[in-house]
Amino acid sequence: MRRKLAVVAGLWSQRLNWLVERVCAVLVGVLVLVVWLGIVSRYAVDLNVTWTEEAARYLMIWAALLAVSSGVARREHVYVEFLFNVLPKPAQRLVTILFDVVSIVFFGLLLIYGTTMAQLGASQFSMLFDLSMALPFAAVPVSAGLSLVQLLLTIAARPAAPLSTHAVVEEMQA
Amino acid sequence: MIAVGVLFVLLLSFGLPIGYVLGIAGIAGLVQVGGVDMLAMAPQRFFAGLDLFTFLAMPFFILAGEIMNRAGITQRLVNFADSLVGFLRGGMAQSNMVASVLFAGISGAAVAEAAAFGNTMVPAMVRAGYPRPFSCAVVVAGSIIGPTIPPSNLMVIYGSMMGVSIAGLFAAGILPGLLMALFCMAVIAALGRRLNLPKSDQRPSLRRILMASKESVYALIMPAIILGGILGGFVTPTEGAAIAVGYALFVGAAIYRELRWSDLPDMLVRTARVTGVVFLIIASASILSWWMAFLGVPQMITTLFLSISHDRNVVIAMVLLLLLVLGMVMDINAILILLAPVLAPLAASVGLDPVHAGVMIVLALNLGLMTPPVGASLFVLCSITGEKLERIAAAMWPFIVAEVFVLLLVAFWSDVTMAVPRLLGL
Image (cartoon, rainbow over all chains, first blue to last red; front, top):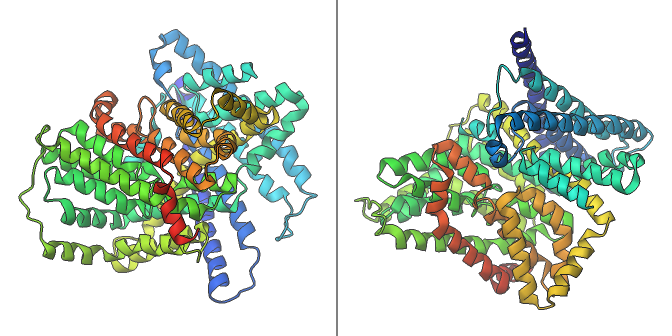
């Protein structure tokens, strides 16, 4: 039963991440185009686009913060494992649980207070774009929320897919 | 304050990802100084820490590096380097260093280079009879030339945060980066006989160099375009980085024809992911660094340093020692964000130019990529090649000594950094 749950959780973690990564790819692609547009407008034909700088900044923040949840799903966030590895097994289990709790608290607080920030941002407007600041600010709670979901899914999936070390690097070999 | 420090060290050393650790410690700090009401500050600092236009250069330089690897640009740079120095004893190691310099002119991060070269150069060197730990050490030592010679993501962060000219920092990094390559090549030459490094039977030939440079000419003029544009003041670093992406795409797709449309999504996703990992660290560190500033930690550290000595050289030595030691155990982006607001005023108070101080700090942190036990480039190589960290580290100490020597030159002889920016009028 536990194992079946773990497999299902792992599967959903992958599916959600697949979707998030596609969104990230589109955002980075648009980001490149926006900055190119700004360059063309500044050096070649004046297209009278004053919003590119602001749009680029917010696109970057959205893309990078969404990718944070991908890093959670793939265990890509950089960590140091020496001291952990020398701990006896029971202590490792305790530390793992403790760290899960701490991580949940971290993303949970960012989600809660980030939501408040985004709501307050609805009454502020960006400098050039005249865009409600709720949109850029929302990147923080959305990212924290997705990370939280991925965190819970990876915790649930752990019996099926135990901790892999330095997934960043595994990926880089590809 | 001590409680927050202890929490930070414990979480970090037992293996919580540093991006979380910085945020948790920052949040704990906020609660400690202002109670639960202060928690609203956390997402604000988290967001504000990323909200800088100049930071855009980072994902773009990462993307440009991805494209270069995929489009065969990197391989052509290696071939060109080989035509130049491949005939020497230990020629493949020597060409690795030269290729690192060429690659450095386009890439802003060390790990991308370590991964690319670790995948191709190390197996090739091992096949040719080089000891594997030595081959890994060469790639690791070469990889930190990348973020020293511009563009450099750490310089982008430092310049953006401290209001120092990024173009100035870029210009100042050129000479130290070349010196690093030169000293490392000297190390390889000196070790050549002792390690009995292979000597290929190819002769140095002008014809071969011409052939290779013809093959790689589009890759070779890329750094010239990007750096020329940025250092000449024609484009901002962000624009230069975006142009680098465009140029790499064009060369890869239209000239070398190795890039396919279907490669694109994967490269974009990887760019977002690498950026996400770095940006979480930056954003979380911004929470902690706000708390540090609130408590006046920068002033405390400055006072502490200056109470030990007012002498410029002693202060520089203490700063370097601090950065090298921290670089051994902590992620360098995090160190930079936490300590730049501390070290920049300290350096200014003993009369260092902001650009000189910035390059010195970045260089000292770059060394943290290759020093055990925690070094990002070192980890990449271990994982790719399966070689043991201790064995790479043992083969690497001559390179560490050489690069620390360059660091000392940079720190104590300001002309090494300032000559080029002065020449360019930056």
